[in-house]
Image (cartoon, rainbow, N blue to C red; front, side, top):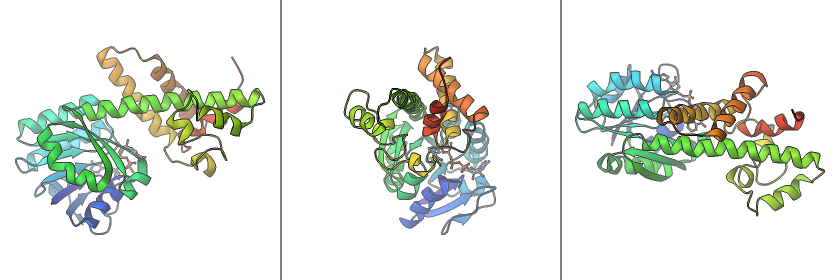
Length: 290
Ligand code: NAD
């Protein structure tokens, strides 16, 4: 397949590499990042999109996505698919889908979970919003870049699924970290805490698969000095998107709101920037009540 790939940063580059390795013809554009081996460089986003049957974007935010979409949609072939894999606000995803439809282009919002490791290994999960026709056209590419693709519904549904999932993740990570810090102060051994909670009703992915306590549970960023992994500032980005979405539909999300505030404080004034999001545990360890 002829593929245009726009945004070849930490996630985009390994995803594009996997498409090349599977034999696809990939033309890329990124104003800052180098072209991965096997990807043909274009001089503009429109240049990368012109001949493509599928254009994939992997960009920092909704504002940049809107700007890139405004440039590439007029350049794309009718019937081609614009597939955005970035994590952006639901409104931007829907706006881009609307513009694409008006120009005879199919569109998908297909954010991912699995991080840089999943992108390199080709084991991402895609949460996809858009028409069934567009989903079926891109499915073979999802199968190369990932291990699972869920068609969630119409435009915006992929982003909705992503931010709801990550709101749960932010909240459960904080709950897990504050419980570990409480357990410490109560004199409970961390390994015993893990043994009980990971097999009891307090279990979650944060505890069982990504335990924030070093030396306890499976290997995680806690065992690597809290180097990311999934950086606290990316968690904050996703939590902010969840709150923006909640605001737009008048949804009450008090836990998501508090998690956003805690990660904001952590990133902006408590040294959390550049740390894994599970470094909430050492943060709580140092703190007192009140
Ligand atoms: P990144 O900053 O490494 O890459 C983004 C790339 O987009 C950069 O190389 C940048 O030069 C490029 N870019 C910016 N403006 C552009 C433009 N106008 N045209 C073309 N390219 C442009 O970010 P990343 O970690 O690769 O994340 C990309 C997206 O994936 C984000 O939306 C992020 O939230 C999401 N995401 C990241 C992770 C992760 O663990 N890194 C996990 C899941 C989802």
